[in-house]
Structures are given as C-alpha cells and as structure tokens.
Amino acid sequence: MNIGSILSQSFKYAFSNFSKRIREGFPPVLILTIAFNLLDYLISNEIATKFTIIIFSILITLITSAIGVCVHEEILSNKKFNFLNEFFSKKNIKYLAGFILITLIALSPIIIFFVLKDNLNINQNTSALFIILWIFTTIFALKLIFVLPKIATQENYKLKLTEINDIGSQLFILISIITIAFLFPSYIYLFLQISILKSFTETSSFLKPLFDLGSFYITYMNYLVFFAVISFSYKTTLIKK
Image 1: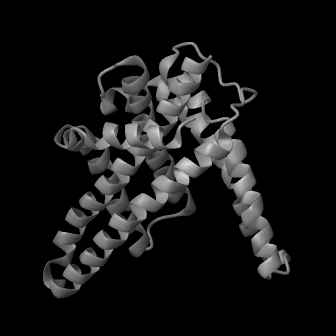
Image 2: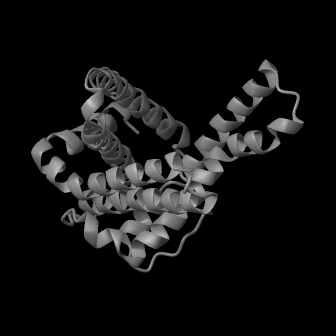
Image 3: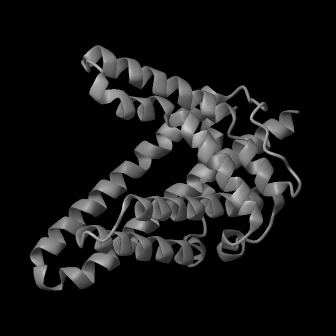
C-alpha cells in the first residue's frame, strides 16, 4: 500500500471542497458543542453522575460512528453525505458496536493499566511495557478495522472479527501521521482561545461555546481524514484482490 498516496487522497477528500465540508459538518459539530457544554455545566454544578458521563460518551461515539458511515458510503458507494440520516439509522448502531469493540481492543493495555495501577509497582519499565503492549494491540485492532467500511456499505453484513487484513502496521503509521498533523492546529487554536478568553473575561461565557464550535470543527476534519484513510485503504485492498 502506498502510504503517501492514501494520505494525499484522504486530505484531498476532506479539504478539496472546504465550504461543502463546513456545511456538512455543521450538524455533528453543533451537537458535539451542545453536548460538551451541557456536560461541562452538569459537572461544574455537581449534577452529573457516572451514568450521565457514560450517556454523553455513548452519544459522542455515536456521532463519530455516523460520520464514519457517511465517509465510507461517499467514498466507496458514491452515496451523498447525509449525517442526520445515518445518525438515526440501525446501521449506525451496528457500526457503533464494531467501532467500540475495535477501540476496546486497541486501548486494552491502557484500560488494564488504569484498573490495576493501585496494585502495580509502577516505574519506567512498567510504563514502557504498557506502551509497547498498546502499540501491538492498536496494530492488531487496525488489522480488524475493515469490518467498519463493510458494515457501512453492505446492508446485511454481519460483524466478523475473524477478518484480518495484513496492513495493520501501515495503517498505524497513517493514523499516527494524521494525529500529529492535527495536533498543531489544535494546540494553536487552544492557545488563541485561552489568550482571548483571558482578555475578555466578562464575555467569556458567551465566547467559549463559539470557540468550542471551532474546536470541534478541527476534530470533525480530523474524523473525515481518519475515516477517509480507512476507506481508501480498504478500496486499495479490494482493487488488489
């Protein structure tokens, strides 16, 4: 697989018609902004419970999976991007299940680390071991990632974690590059947000949701590139077959 070509296609998909992507991204970004600020309000006023946080986490993951379904369908099936249609679809629930399973596999060492950290003698060697394990589990999870575009494009597809691709390490490199690429604008935006909110403390309660909207647009573009990478990589493997 040509990593450079996949990256080029994925960024071109997300940014070539930027105004169109901004319009398409408004519903998920708005929902994310409202959900985030509502959760922040509930936590700051000590109203939120663990159950509340779980519900909001599921909602955010459901939004992410709906974006994934839309991207896969547009790239692989030439279907028009419609977030709201997919957000409320049964397909999105199935996609969500696959997405959560793969995420749990990838993050399993990190989850185990935080569950057992009170009973572990944590030192540099222990931390390094869990990081190495996390890299291996993430690569293995990416070997299963093609179940997601299959769920998105095949109406009657059944979730099968036995289907393993042979490009997990290449996908890991691609996802790492994307993550690093979006870290820079995220940090720059965060720095500007903090600086401006400090300068306008009287209107910070009004300005913060607007800044959050912009922040989630950066996250949204990151999602587009991420799912485009999966789609184009999957498409490449189909062509080779």
